[in-house]
Image 1 (cartoon, rainbow, N blue to C red):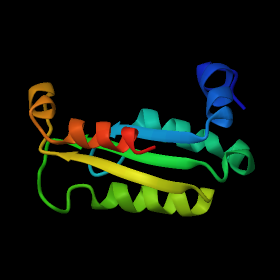
Image 2: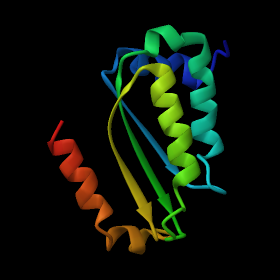
Image 3: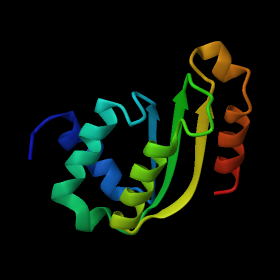
Length: 117
């Protein structure tokens, strides 16, 4: 176990949380290296992270219908393995810049998802 900010600051909060929100830009059809590093750190705590609720939020410049398929498959596999309850996904396709995100429906979708918790 590395003694860094993930271990000392983030992991205690994740272990305490009922809901985990995995947020990432889409990089070559997968999650960012930063999020993957955190997911890889689950390994030493898999049992203590089981049974939580989770949400996936991601943005991508591409707007093709298959853009998020690999990321969603990875997330769904993680949800199944970790025995999480998927609360929902906000997949912001066609959101390659801040203005595109701000003028999309995805912010409203995220707000509604939060309101329904």
